[in-house]
Amino acid sequence: MNSRRTRLGSAIAVILTVLVLVPTAVLFGRVWTDNADQRDNTELEKQGVQYITALTPLISALAESQSTAIAGVAEPPETLAAAVTGVSAVDAQLGDDLRTKERWADLKNKISKLPDASGRINQLNAHIEVTDLTLALYSAVQRNSKLTLDPDADISSLQQAVGTYMPRVTVEVNRTGDYANLLQTLPAANRAQIQGQFAYEVIAVQESVKRLTEALQSAVDNTTSATLSSSLVNALDSFRRGIEQLIRGADPTGGQPSSGTTSTAQTTLQGALSNLAGVTLREMDRLLDDRVDSLNYRRGEAVVMGALALLFVAGALAWPAFSRRRDTEPAAAPADRPIGESTRDVALDRPGPGPGPYGAPPPYGAPGPYGQSPGYGDLDATRGERSGALR
Image 1 (cartoon, rainbow, N blue to C red):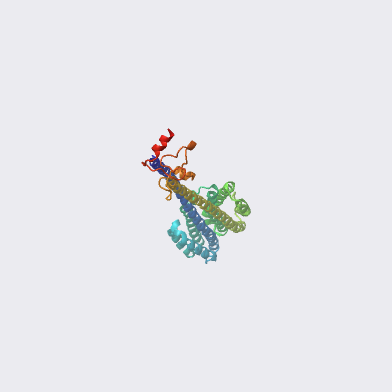
Image 2: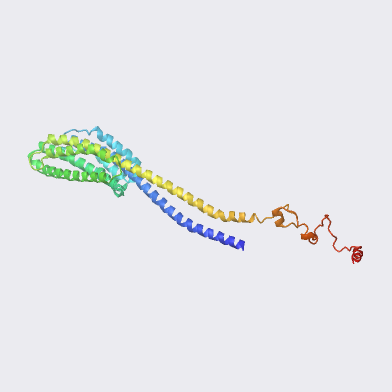
């Protein structure tokens, strides 16, 4: 009966263990897979931030190259060669993961051919083509690094600001200043097309600045960073002053633009945008690092919970065997107990029974009062004589 009960208890323990272990394993697997996917996506986003960090000096160097080329300088600025080298290094490291190698190779080839263009209009058109390809490279990096799919509102807004609107404002501000300079120097017959492009760029700058400001404001409103708001204040103030100066110099309501004012505003804005981009990229990288730390902590929690579950399962499996062993130990008889001695006597550690009450003889076969035991079956020869005398 006890054996049957023990087997039933062991079977129930095994069934309960399986019922606990299977859901726990499934849950652990899902948590681990989800954590791994989030870590991979975050690391890919960090690569996107690293690539955009390298593109920021390039877009500024291309703007400088365009302005100097229109001014008649044949050689591109030294900043352009340094920026190209920086992007090439990053693309060699991250280009396979971000799928940018072919796009960068084509862009790099066109940058190298910029000095071959002759004439100010041809130089301008060549630089416009290159800067448009650079903006497209920004978009490819955002898309392939999954920055555009980031679930956090602050990072999503920051990546729009630094990956879409800032480079666009940089290009549009520079073109506005360059078109203003061309309008001052080109013959009147060639100004009509440039005048239309100039007006378009002034409107484009205002629209891009509006969207950039909205994206940064959204990031500040939704961020968990304690430093984002304070970091952006000074950079935004300088940027807004440059925009106001550019609009005054452009005079979009009619009249002749002031090339001197727009050139000064152009220089101020390039520096402000570079500073603003650096602040934004550092904040993005810090937020992504915080997310990686949080994911690492959750992974550690999952490992600890999984280990505890395994320990509980091992204990549940080992408990029936331990219980059986404990139950069988008291049933074993001591090896040195004399044969014929009862368990009760041994347990109480007392001698066998003595004489019965009122001097009655001890039980049959027990020793007498003098340590003698009557012989079984023996006859006393004098028993008859003693009986007769008494009668």
